[in-house]
Length: 207
Picture 1 (cartoon, helix red, strand yellow):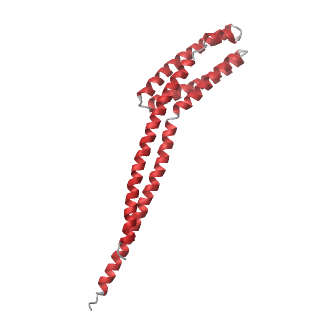
Picture 2 (tube, helix red, strand yellow):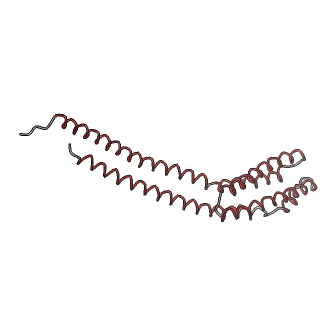
Picture 3 (tube, helix red, strand yellow):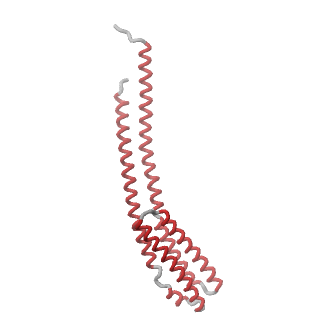
């Protein structure tokens, strides 16, 4: 009966242990890849949601600007109160103007840029009309009716521009989310195949 050399048995044992360690490490690596793909998807979706909610945010801010203009008309009973209310309105106007310019700079989608460019132009023109309306308010002894009539309805088109831009942005967000989800699903499926292969290899490898 042939006797295997002790060195050969020890060598086989060593390589067997090393192989198991390597397979186990690979197993946990692919398991991490699956977990990491899921985490990255959630992070990318959160970033996309934040980016593509910009126009929704500016819609809210613009409505606040409209309210501040109403405050100028209804709460200004003297030059002091007018100055205070106009300053608040002016601050809100600049906030909206800055946000609109940022959206244009940060987007390369033509439908969004076109609508936002139109919004910015109309927003600037409206601001000049508000200034003229303030002059009417002063001349009328702070009676808001004439000043209000001079700018009545000028904000409605701007709300429509923002609505159109928001629709375009939501469509783009939907496409981006679908692409991210499909890409991550593909990565997870590949990782699962590798994980299953390694599991079977570890189970069926010689003891």
